[in-house]
Amino acid sequence: MVGEPYWRSWPLPGGVDDAGFVPLAATVDRFVSAGLRLETLIDSSKDDWDRYESLHWRALEEWLAANPDDADDRFENVRDWLVAEFRKSPAERDPVAQGVFVELELDEAAGRRHLLESERFRALLAEPALARAA
Image (cartoon, rainbow, N blue to C red; front, side, top):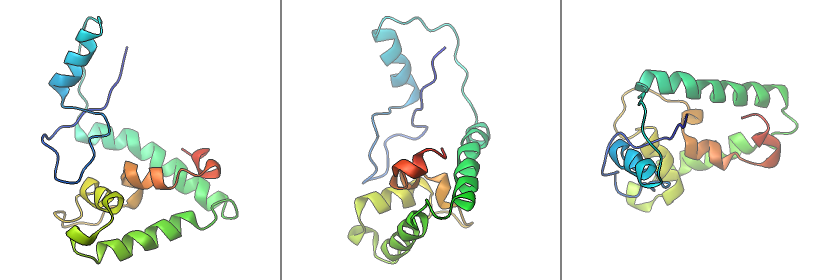
């Protein structure tokens, strides 16, 4: 059994790094070209994936709450930097910050999203002490 993330929408919006992932059909092609045989394919819904990922977000939030001295204000510092970047026009934003905003659909979404929903944001928090929480 192998699990691999893939992009549901392609092409990606400008400025978004594909992180080495491709659409589902190309992902299957990668496995087949590596000599693996596809037996079955289970594709999670967006809700399934969000439920799975939310366990990581919750673990990190709980760890940050339980270990405030180890967090070094990293969450707040990164969040404050992202707030400052969001106030800029998209063309002026740091590409990493813009990637977080695109990932969270902040320019299109009417509702608020938590920063921990962004893999890019969680990567910014990936200091050795924080990595234990995920």
